[in-house]
Structure formats: structure tokens, C-alpha cells
Image (cartoon, rainbow, N blue to C red; front, side, top):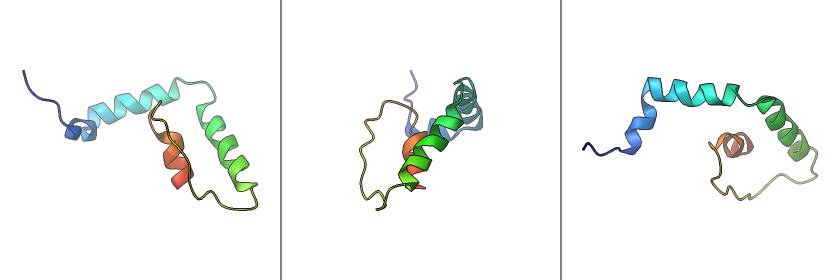
Length: 65
């Protein structure tokens, strides 16, 4: 049996499949937009946040971006 490494997630077909799941979530991009709007309305920038690793990391990436 071949060992799966972290490199497999960089393969084009795997990336495309993962991105297609995001499109299947109703209003996914609107949810991220709302979260970013709420964060932007704060008087102070977000210095730290906790990502519990319960998803694909897209919200954490958006917050860091």
C-alpha cells in the first residue's frame, strides 16, 4: 500500500474536487463575507484567533488575508 503524504493535496484533480465542495454549500461566500465585515467593524484589528480545524480552513485563510 502506498503511503499518502501531504503532497497529494497539491495535485490538480484533488484541489479541483475540494473546491467543488465549497460551491455545494449554500451562501458559503456570503457567510465568509459577513464574517469579514463583522471583523472589519471592530475598533481594533484581530490579533489572534483560534481555528479548531473543523473545516477546510477557508475562513482562517480569509481572516489571515
